[in-house]
Length: 192
Image (cartoon, rainbow, N blue to C red; front, side, top):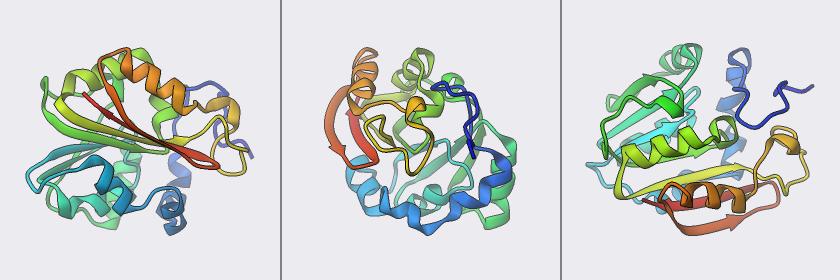
């Protein structure tokens, strides 16, 4: 079954009717809470955003370690599912596309996305992230790799490479800090 029907990078979102799949703890095999904390480097006062938060699987994991965490998703249905699962007190919901984040310039200390970068990867989204993440702030991108075999996640035709991701972020002023390649995914740490 092709859950990502458009066949084009940035042209789809994960289906709300399958939101329960986002709560599968085996997702940690692609990125653990510890790896996100290590690469994002938040403080207890940090304001960070989970880009494509879905049901809040990773948002809930990072909430105890930050001041404010914004659960950003373009689908109100995902926020509804998140609320049903319980919401930490420092989580604020933002219903928006990454290309139109409603934050002031330099508002965020950092942001991360886990398996959603391919859904919003476009020049406007990257420019918006460069605007809202403060200088020195980090962006952690964990996503499906075009170099993978396609056994998990979207078809390889809808994925990007770590190199494509680094180049796109560097074009809007981010510096690549770290790149980690895995059999099916990659992790890119960028600093504004």
